[in-house]
Length: 394
Image 1 (cartoon, one colour):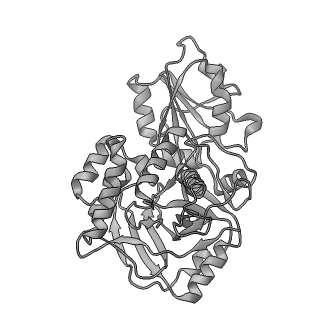
Image 2: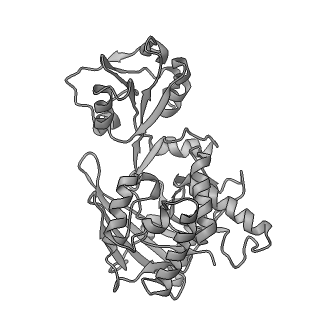
């Protein structure tokens, strides 16, 4: 079962910086315009090392900055290994206050097919190449992969944590808090719970696969064994219990363009579509709790698509299977329902497909069965901040 260990984190020195100015969202949800916003907030913001601009020398620049920040006291290395409880307090799309609470530790990378760490989405080669170049240069984990534990009891261990080591509130209003856990009995209990069942990769498939590639590279170079001094066999990971109360899952919708204008979209997607009353307000809440299938939006109307015999499959799988009927086309991805509606209304795209969020059960079932869902199927919310913790591999 998964090996989960404490580690000596590299953290910002709060006498030198303010956490809200130096942390940032994960690299893969930041646009070039947003990157500039974060970079301008502080010369020490995490985007300067986690999301490089110039290729290829940007990777070496990231390494130099990380080294300079440590040498100059902007970052410091904790004196002893610890687990780090990480809490995210937020309000979900229904207006309900929620709390996600997990543990950041060093998770041992597993072998292919051994059933310890279960992916649930396919990955893209370009994204992995970027992360691999950055890991080679910095020799560090710069942001945590997010995994979901199939075991029960992790959340129950995270009580009476005391004042947090660090905290900040992001631009979406999510409260992020961090605590160090070094008491031997609690460290042992956390390792035992996480090690008692497989974990599912929720967010960070590209970073996980990159870490496996890097581990094998340095092992092949004779620099490290799988338990050696570089620590390349371990990956900084936030582990959260797989439970509805702990996990917020949003869908990623599809924008469809550049297809033959003579195509009958309703016929292409098959089934028995049902028209949606135009007076109904389509939003995240509707897709999560009311819709009985994915919704096709065109300039002429809105239809709930019949999922047919695939009713228990995630919408992304059903849609991916039916899209070839369109012939040549281009797919884009969007998180916001309102943006999808606007894109169709102003003619930016020819159609949009609104998907329902996956359930915790669907995620667990897909991972346990070894099924890789299409890219951009799930969007876990809220996102842990890059910069709350770093982990050196040396």
